[in-house]
Length: 396
Image (cartoon, rainbow, N blue to C red; front, top):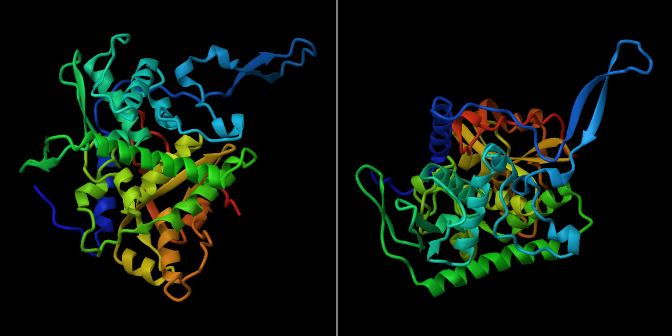
């Protein structure tokens, strides 16, 4: 069923849909859950102290040799820190979702093949060197789509695993059962230009604002600020605002093909709500920083920013990012900071972002949205959903 254009006060609908998905995903069938620690981490062993014979156990730490870790599970190459210059990585995999499928590294390898094939605008995907089942490919496809917005504008047909085809920027319609009907491909040259412009924006944004000496938290803060300054927000009362179903696309870990994704919006200079959050997450993946989208059932607390208060009035839920750096987690709400800045610029057009909502503890988060329930929005394997990190302190 087609949905009407987004109207005011529909943000709660978006987040309600997101939270409903998260609640349902916990009951879905899936493989047995196995907990893993993030790579690379020390291995802790309890050993009896034979020297002093006091009967007390001591903790001995042995660092994992990176060479012993399967290549697919190693951190992505950090070109900025290694060479002093960032180079776009078309196959960078989101670290948290890579961990979700770490029991089967083949899925990660295939995800990288998918991302590389799309980046190169190939017409098909060659898996001749991988013995990949349809089910494994589906997981790899989801991992690739979560890790790269380029994949989300390509329709990949894998009904025939011997002939996996790619269609770029296809026309998309939905039938009465909300099922996708994929149409013809847009001009390949136009697709290449859109890809090139997106890669250029990401590359220049990082190289023009970061150095090899920035810490991870500085990287996260600087890019966050730059995105806020670079793009307009497509508010819910815009006549050409995206439909609700398009806003929700991608927030549940499923692969949805749209003809107006993040990279299209970057080219236009205007992002809808979900694309602001997704673009920030993509930058963090490129910079080897774990960034998770969290959805919550929560009551908005008046913030005395005109646009923010008006947009959030009556909402019963919200979504934002949690970044993890140096073993610490912080809430970061790029949409709140964008709407606060737009409110301030109604009176002072040159006002600079003051990042009130970046680097928040859970206690500080509750001062703007009182959270009753929250869960990570994306998942690949529902029974291995990622636990929401605890944010114990404010960054500043």
